[in-house]
Image (cartoon, rainbow, N blue to C red; front, side, top):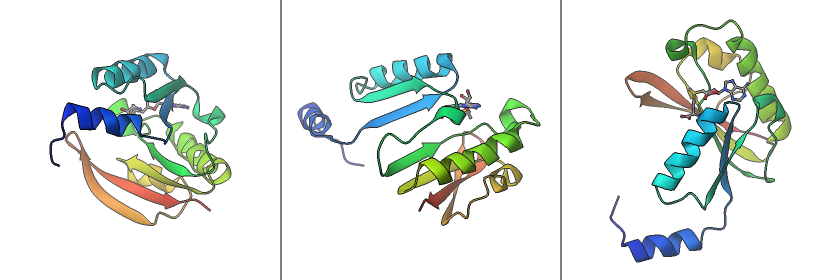
Amino acid sequence: MGATSPKAESSRKESLTASIGGSDRDGGVVEQAIANAQHCGVGDRVWFAEIDLADVSAPATSGVLFCNPPYGERLGQDSDLGAFYKLLGDVLKQRFKGWTAFVLSGNKELSQSIGLKSSQRIAVFNGSLPCQLLRYELY
Ligand SMILES: C[S@@+](CC[C@H](N)C(=O)[O-])C[C@H]1O[C@@H](n2cnc3c(N)ncnc32)[C@H](O)[C@@H]1O
């Protein structure tokens, strides 16, 4: 990626019309995300909210969603994770029609619990963990 001058960067930020935001149920994670955005100079352009997945709704009629859900590898196996992934699939299907979703998955079995057919699988690393970025077109 080429370097841009601070002036050009500022102008690009000002002309940004898309709403960019994120949510997590953990207030500490939300605070960290706000601090990171401020550190990167985009604190006034990105919103964050403390919301449980069960209460998430689409902020627009179309858009692109990225989700980095918990997966047992790092957080410890949790029998509720299967239910979490099923809920994720239901929320995407029912509330995000018209959106494209990307879900970072470090666990194939759990990602199958989403219950949606991915249109693309991209191999990535999350730190040292081999993962897949799953793409879903939501109609
Ligand atoms: C792998 S971490 C990702 C953290 C952060 N969002 C990121 O991308 O760096 C998984 C996150 O899922 C959140 N989480 C777990 N269960 C949730 C739920 N029911 N609703 C919303 N967030 C949840 C956890 O609080 C945790 O921060």
